[in-house]
Image 1 (tube, rainbow, N blue to C red):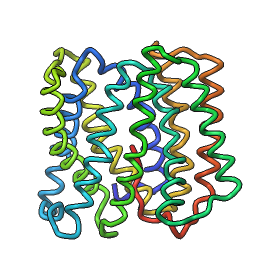
Image 2 (tube, one colour):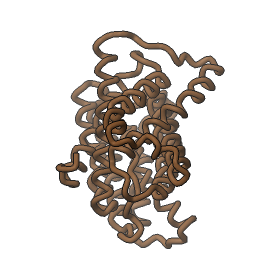
Image 3 (cartoon, rainbow, N blue to C red):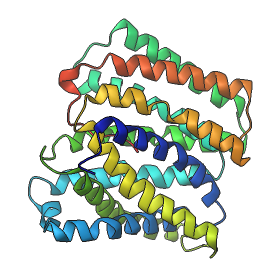
Image 4 (spheres, rainbow, N blue to C red):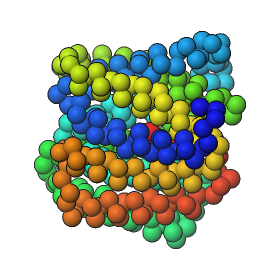
Length: 303
């Protein structure tokens, strides 16, 4: 991984991120969302375990200066949002989920205004209006349908990624991307256990799965490709280049999701959804490119 340039690492992260909503949609009926999250994060930890052991870095996760940030990153960056997104994908389409995730740019703007007292520029306000317009097009297209239920769940999760960003900034700058990916997966797995227990108490079937090649491929992708390798490449990119530029590039992943989902038969090309995608992407891009460079370094992404 050390020999891979940040730009190449970024585009690998874009491709990986573009596939995950489609994979999450295929998981519906194959494995419960809770069990998928538990197995996937466990697989990610096992993948990087030899590297962490070789470098004798297991103790890093439990140091005084890293324990709390890793706890929050695991909970708010993976355990809660991805569980809810997996649940949402049982109702909505991968393209809708990917497009609605662009509201993260709006949440970032709001948090900067509230906690950093940054006054949004005209471009940022225009970008916010475009994102909201795109989201409105998507929501109105499935109003009061089962798909609408999934869309609302997705919208309620995106802010969590921004909370994880705030705590990720507290991690030491010298931690390698493989270690960040491992720590995120470790604490996501730990948090997923009590969450699964709570869901079970409300009569959610958390242990359902259907053995077969589909399940094996899903776990391989979600655990190794997405949570282990994909996150590591994302951290490699953003720790070696300006985050605003990296975010502007990764914002294009809904296009990949849309195309893959349509080809896989889980989505259809539709004028309304295409218009929503164009509006949301344009708005998110406008917001992102106006982020001040001095406030973007060493943050972490929502992949």
